[in-house]
Length: 183
Figure 1 (tube, rainbow, N blue to C red):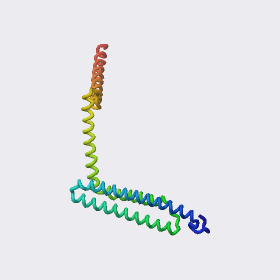
Figure 2: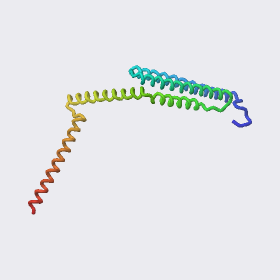
Figure 3: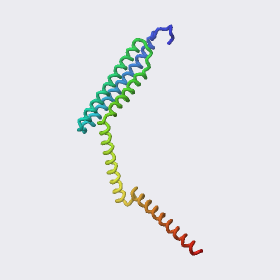
Figure 4: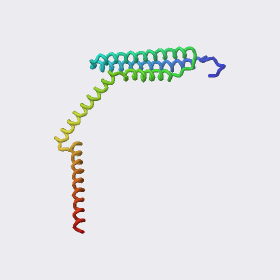
């Protein structure tokens, strides 16, 4: 667009711009709502298992801060929409960036809470216990089918290392004996 040409005087240009902006805005809004919904659902599921009053308070504060971040993003998106309507050159990607930045900031607000840390720790612990159970079940299944397990192979490897260590010790003693005999 040149400086002498008024912004968006061509109806086709205006229609294309508005269509692109509406599509980007609708896509951003839909993704925002989905992200917020998933976030809130998973957060409340995590909070259900929390009984420490300090963690619950911290969790609600983190949630409130995250919500404030989403509301600020909504305000920014609205303001940029109004800027575009008044003729300012607003790229549709700006809306995507607004929501991505808001999602990152909202996640930080929640991730910095003690409730999130406790819940994450509990989830990791449960996952490790589950993995251990699966490994034990796999070992039992392999043994019952006559196959070697990782543990079996490790044990054989440890035994081989011990045999090599003993063999080296015996060789050293033999070398010492041979040296004495040759003198």
